[in-house]
Image (cartoon, rainbow, N blue to C red; front, side):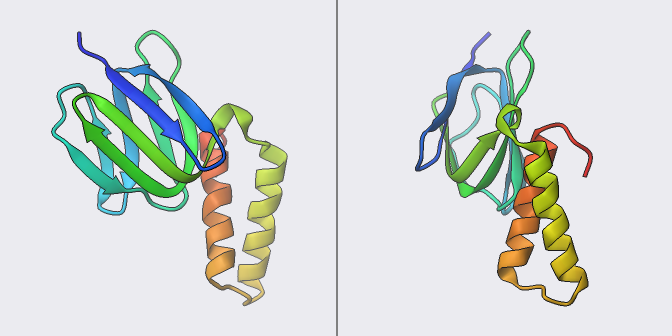
Length: 133
């Protein structure tokens, strides 16, 4: 069976690369699932999204992805994220603290774009780590 060649990068580093059976990402147009043989596509990733890479026989690779692009062509999938973090790297306590601070600010009526962004990113980090949000 054909495989996808997947690369996940951010400006800071290469997050992960390898073969996969399927990639699921959330774009501004909705969630997209990519399997071998998928038509070429270029999508804009949402802030605070979770990327899932299904690797047959191995556990799924899960990452919090904050903005960027997904490009698909000839079974090559490139995720070019503004920021990304593997679920296994997430500091759950720090992410919960960041979410709590953002929610407290929102409840106090201090909501602005930066606070909403901080809350989205914290939720994505927690979901990527396998935590309930």
